[in-house]
Image 1 (cartoon, one colour):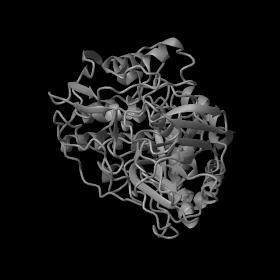
Image 2 (spheres, rainbow, N blue to C red; image 1 turned 135 degrees about the vertical axis):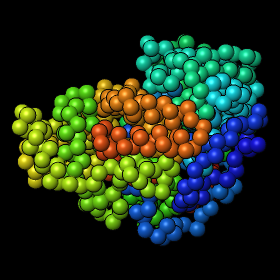
Image 3 (cartoon, rainbow, N blue to C red; image 1 turned 180 degrees about the vertical axis):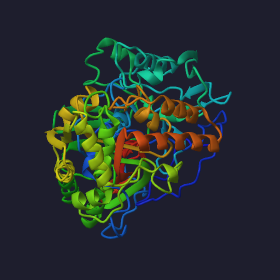
Length: 553
């Protein structure tokens, strides 16, 4: 039986051994054990950090602190993030990305979540999520008596309302593709039966990734447009104030279903684009902890005497190409871009650290990595030949690169520009945008030619499908390949690890040839914290469960 209240938060610098997962269907009292996607980042913070393994001696500068120590009741913790959130509507945001996940969990809690250390899907607001037939039918059982902060009940009809709303095309939810074909039946006040159009033995991870947040139907119905700014959930905190562009203040929810939690009276979230500023703010006592998607910040945090908890994942920092418009609708343009650049040199130049560059979305040693399907390395002769071929066809490579307006993001763009300019028949301009501009221009409206992005996952389902499948919610570049879609579908429905591995190997080979994205640095996620902070429990993309957070004194 999966414990209802995990009591062992992530310890510093955990590096899990990569072992192929064993699929074990859940019993009626527990959520199934599985390795789960950590999901896709909704921000370009990833452009300003580097991957796990680059921080040097993991113990250097770390305080004599135990992030699993008991918490005292009360106090305030201040969290640093890079980007402002647009709102709190579960049907309108990428829920577990680094920009939103912790904030959303503070207000709504989670039905289930994936333990970032093990990939195991664990219960929270739900008591269980089980399948009696191998993945076609799933039964969600909720804890009885859970209340939203407005006093209404979080029951099975509330979950049905939220998921049906995500399936409404008029809402334009990022979860639409996931929710639209679900058949939802309220069996009793705490039981929702979900029928899928096709078997998916990994659907519990999909729920953890994309459908874990539930808002009050009463509050949503009363003000659908205003709910994002005035959210009502069943989480450990309520949103007390929001100073746009500066900070959010969350106060303890007196109706929270765990009476002993949250330990904190108040959680404050502040934003700063510059990762160095974030580290300096925490180190100087202006904040208590920060979240990052990888380890350049972790190394700086260790140097500053902070503790660091991090987990290695698959995925990485990447360039995404808009394949729906020129010039990157031509595969030769994408191939030329990739062949022109050396990932190791990019990392060294931009981050000043000797780190290995990426060989693709599945680094060696990670789950389902296919050694014969690695992304091709630098080949400048091939790059120039492709650029000449495009120019002969009247299509010289000319494009604008959209970068986040942070130091490392701009430096990444400038590095790429400096290497491309040494070749003929190519011109790259740089457009730097602030956080809201990136969210609206790249994430929402897909108004870009090439830009920075990130993906992080332990198990590829559903993150890889969201990134690469035609119509996927994180497929910002609009890439479509029928064979890749078939392979992703086969992997999603497969129980046998060998069948899944073969399907994901096909996806990797196609992506290596077609280059819908180009990965330049392997991913991980990390929390840097002051010694007084305890209860660090991570999920999703460098997100924290706020009900666990506390102070040791």
